Image 1 (cartoon, each protein chain N blue to C red):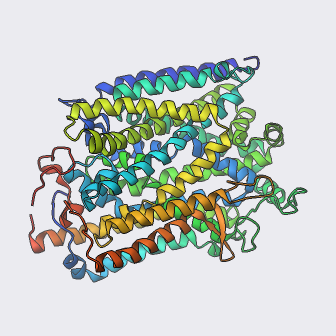
Image 2: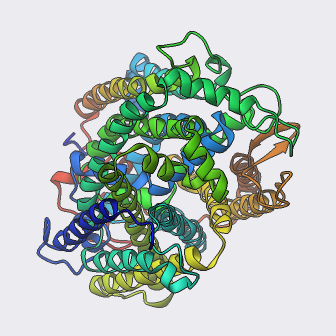
Image 3: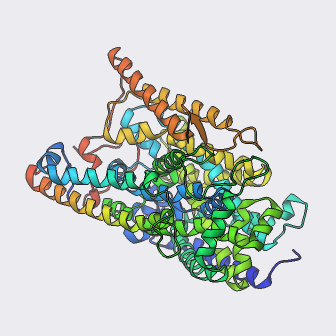
Length: 546
Length: 88
């Protein structure tokens, strides 16, 4: 810890301690009469209004990894990184179509997880298990990447990086994680909901300051864009191709327009299939709170667009670019940029924002994964008569196990492995589209057709992602491959295959009259807003009005 | 939004203009964000920002506005559906 800046370090520690306190106080925030219920620990009592939901979803969806990885991609490849910006635009009109329906039907039936809905809609434990499995599988590397984000900041701060002993080196990470694990265990979803206020405030402050201040140090925006344009047009001596693109082009040089659009569309559809996004949504009190947030959440997208531009600032700042080149890790671009540009006290605020920004989604993701395991594996297959109190205890413990697993991921495995798994996670989670989004609108699909389609999409997506190569890596080099001569996001190809299989098999299974399973939902429940009626008790298969 | 009625097919049929407008607005919002040939260019610049970059930035408040209009239309459809068929 030789080159640690004391001011930066102190500010990060102080803000971290404040947030820890909040995490524990959250247990008493909006307290219910009976806390021993999964609706309380796992969904914060399903009572958040528009305002809290905005902070919670914003803190949930715009993760620390996003703040590190998107500018890293822009720094490394140029305009293709802005697919994330287009993606956070189209996500809201897409989600407005189906998310309020999921909220309504889940509220009426007391569903806690997306797999609860699948179970109720198709009367199929197998399909519900497949969706729960996919959700947990996709969340694990995602949580691990939040830690990678923290590690990037800690590395630039110079904390612990000098030791060769894994335990000593990652001790600050262990401490951060232990604290996160304990307050999530104690306070459940209330903790990230309360901490999200701090996180979002810090991030808005440092991003806005950075966007107005840094260009004055780098010769203005014209110099930033100009340097980036020249830089990405430079021919790489290794690949004999340009280093990147300043605009998505029609020429096939690795980041075409179709690649850009398909990545954006696929990611947008995938976002609210992720269990943690659904957890944040189901915690809302009213259907209108969910809908209104689709209007207010794009404000975070503005933030993301500005953060993406940090990648170009890092290109335009010779010191940052040299630092990143020395470490060979583009993920350090933003931390290095801040460290070089800001006075140390403000760097502390920005770094604390990123670290706290990792804790909020990590907590929600581990809660979502724990709920999936409890409801759709433990209760479904091992203890059908589990009381609400037992379900809550089970989820609390599983959330610890999930986080421990993610910690091992982050510390033991090479980071490229986690990033590849995260890319795969996006492809995998997209395979829930036909059963989940499809199921919200129609019961036409046959449950076994959906299961087979899901398997086909999972297998194709995994193999296709494995086979992606580039001049420096032989496998897992990206998330796009070439189909009929066009570079396109693998997740999108896989979900089309998934859908075609599901449609064809549905025709066959219907013609042969294979049993379709019971559907416990009714059409009007998909638009219901039962805030004025007595809430239905939690539990799949609970009795339902009408 | 206190009603618990269905937004039935008849409600959409009763408001063909509003329903069609919703569909057009949602599809247009997605299309203009994803169809890069429209905006993948340098000019016209806004300040020092090349077209590609300021187009995407401006698009976000536009999305908010579009979705606000969509929700107002949805509210109107839902309100008349509640009066019309009187489902509890």
